[in-house]
Length: 61
Image (cartoon, rainbow, N blue to C red):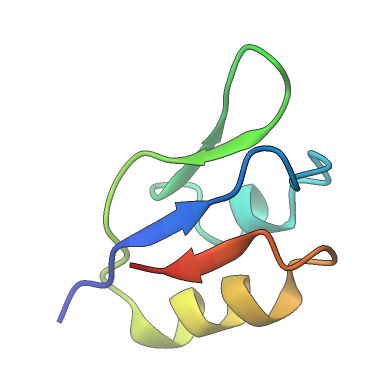
């Protein structure tokens, strides 16, 4: 089942771990912060992105 993820852009530091882990789900906005552009089809990769964000800016909706 697809998981919808959300990035707190105020907390995001633009490190790119989420974009590297799920490039179909995350992209950088014009401010260099990550934003979710699609739902995550891979539950394991979604959990990895949430767990590996160094500032905890990613959460499931």
